[in-house]
Amino acid sequence: MLIVGGNIDGFTRTMTTAITIETSKGDLPLAIGLGLVLITLVVLVNAAAFGLRRAGERFAAVTMRAPVTDLPIVLEDVSVSAGGVTILDRISLALVAGSPTVLIGPNGAGKTTLLRLVMGLIPPTRGRVTWGGREQAASTHRAIVFQRPTMLRRSAAGNIRYALAAAGVPRARRAAHALELGALVGLTGLERRPARRLSGGEQQRLALARALAKEPQILLLDEPTASLDPAATKAIEDVIRKVAASGIKVVMSTHDLGEARRLAGEIVLMHRGRVIESGAADTFFADPRTEEARRFMRGELLV
Ligand SMILES: Nc1ncnc2c1ncn2[C@@H]1O[C@H](COP(=O)(O)OP(=O)(O)O)[C@@H](O)[C@H]1O
Ligand SMILES: [Mg+2]
Image 1 (tube, rainbow, N blue to C red):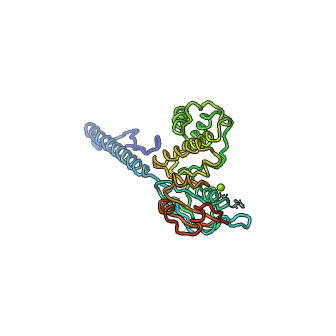
Image 2 (image 1 turned 90 degrees about the horizontal axis):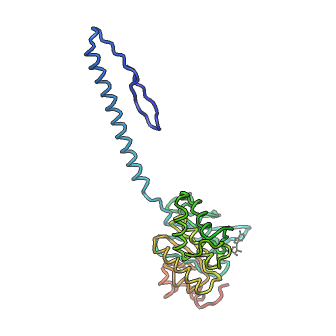
Image 3 (image 1 turned 135 degrees about the horizontal axis):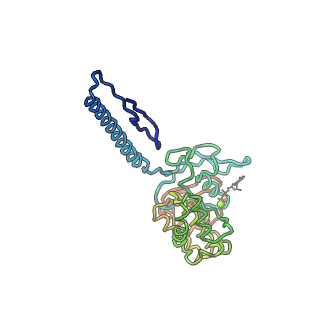
């Protein structure tokens, strides 16, 4: 009897390809009986192997569904220097799940640099950044919107579809999904407009939709309402609130204290590359601990 083991379709099977059974007395019924026993054995072994494989797949599906999270993002004694200048100076900070963390501070404080570091776009010069406890975490779960996002030379919907393609969404689902994302950021009716002809506020909302195409856990926004009028600012803030309510962790910078009060759960006040004060927004605004925070809130210049 010849039993052949082989690899078919990615897993091992055994097959009986030829059976030759010899008995000493030429007892044909016994030979057939033995042959049947062997065939039954082979069938049983294959059935057991198939069962094990299915169970293994189910187990793998369960374990793979365990969410990989980038939170908390922890900065331990992090500095960033460039060209001999210390841009971030020994920052220790934890960004945890929950309501938005808002970075405030004067121009040049290091807000943009901190957002780029948290995104993983630049490495720390010293110290350590971890995402969900991992030092090497691909940016799959994070998205960033820069202060002046660049629109692709195509329609608003085309810009979102491009982001969906980059995020690996199958072509057949992109058009419908682009419309949903457009609606989420309040761009319904403008989908066919060339993106570069949209107003500043509309372009910012389109940039938000593109960032959301990635289905991020963490959304980083660098001064998303800079140079927008009050109506456009409110439209953006409404989207940010919706995004935060959906469970996405928002980390944003702003020059606008009013905006920080309206959106922040946590405040991080930066100055000259350092974190001057951080903590719950309620406490920060009601009872700032540092003289710099008090002066910043009075609208005095921090130098
Ligand atoms: N690549 C760089 N090389 C040298 N200096 C830089 C670089 N990037 C930023 N800076 C400087 O670091 C400081 C902080 O910049 P930034 O993070 O943009 O602050 P903010 O966003 O709070 O205005 C600024 O003085 C800026 O000029
Ligand atoms: Mg900046």
